[in-house]
Amino acid sequence: MEMDEKTGGSIGMKMDGRMEQVGKMEREVGRTMGIGKDEVFLKWGERRDEEWSEEWEERYWEVMGREGRKVVVLDDDPTGIQTVHGVFVYTDAGMESIRAGLLGEERVFFILTNSRALGEEETVRLHREIGRKVAAAAEELGVEFLLVSRGDSTLRGHYPAETESLREGLEGEGVRVDGEVICPFFEEGGRFTAGDVHYVEMGDGRLVPAGETEFARDSSFGYVSSDLKDWVEEKSGGKVKREDVVSVSLEALRKYRIGEVADKLMGVEHFGKVVVNAVSYEDLKVFVIALLKALGRGKYFLFRTAASFVKVLGGMEDRALLEGADLYGNVRSRFGGLVVVGSHVQKTTRQLEVLRKREGLCFLEFSVEGIGDEEKMEAEKRRVLKEAGEQMAAGVSVVIYTGRQLRMAESGKREDNLALSVRISEAVTDLVGRMPVMPRFLVAKGGITSSDIGTKALGVKKAFVPGQILAGVPVWVTGEESRFPGIPYVIFPGNVGAEDALLQVVEKLEAGAVTGE
Image (cartoon, rainbow, N blue to C red):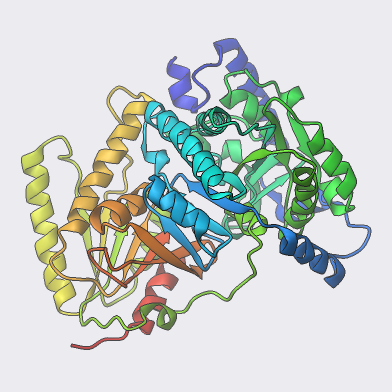
């Protein structure tokens, strides 16, 4: 199956089927590559019968005001809090954490599974167990809940393994799951779905079908299709046919056909798939009004979505972006901050290049060439720790980054590539865990990197999310149990932000820092 590894498509598909799909993708890309965002929106985003008004906004909030279900979000890496604020993240999926989240005052809480760094077998086992535990705890406490599998807005991750195993866990406890809602729309990151095709906005404003981006060539979670109906068929290995996938169109949402959408949801059964088109938050609000109507009639769905959907389903109001001074509280440190860059996507590399032009920072490359040699890696860690510790002790902020060349396993197999990525992340995590001084702030670039640093290096069990420092870039405030308590920890997704975004974050944190003895 050499072609599977080169294209990143579904391993389970037959060769002739793949060639047909690749050809289809190429024809699709030929029609849409380089299309402007406005052109896509004009083509698919039919004008509403009336402009989005205060009346419709009030209707959404009225519906949300009556909604009492707890929203439990399982996050496959720490970046799913990109759109929310005033919530807690639990870094383990034990019954104690689940009960605490269900009993908390907040409508939404997150459980960090970090499953994007796990093999599929372990992921399936974990999600089946979480589904069972959440259902059992909710029954015990008398709490109604909705379960969201928050995944990557560029369609990477263990899909459909995660939602299928969640369904098994829930139904094992007597919860009937009628269907699954798929909504990767993420406005803050420039991810839009129109005409069932999922688009990724590039730096120059062009919208490119997701299947033609670097994310589709991911060594662990690659895929071919941009049309979400085709994507579901591809990722399911053909078990779900595209013609069986239900689509909620932009036309229905933009003409406020609440009843029509609700009726469509009522017809979904046997874990059927529902694709939601959206190019704005208002589209999601209309869909959620219809969704809650269907839920009120007895339907139950799982959700595989990006971060924007969580904000709307959870009834989260907008809040201003955080400034550096908002994040420090009573934390006083004379030491420099620490930025760790692990992600290898092109966007991150460009952001690092821009940051390198800023004076007053210390840049240290952490070589992982000896990743298979413990003695070499230990010597490299000691070198970086010594230099970083000296610079931070002198008040200079340090940027540690891995080499920009993506390392691949010799076998070329997806599971082996993922395992290698995890080993590199573990080396970076060990580096942060052994840092000799407490940084004034901490920024981690990349999903696997930020998760491992938060849970393993810092030992965070429960973190508070005050909001975002930039659009799509969330912040944890670490708990008292952590190695560096009370510091702002910026979780910066690898695939988010303009070229100067990392620079903006560092400058905000540097400007807002409160120093002292």
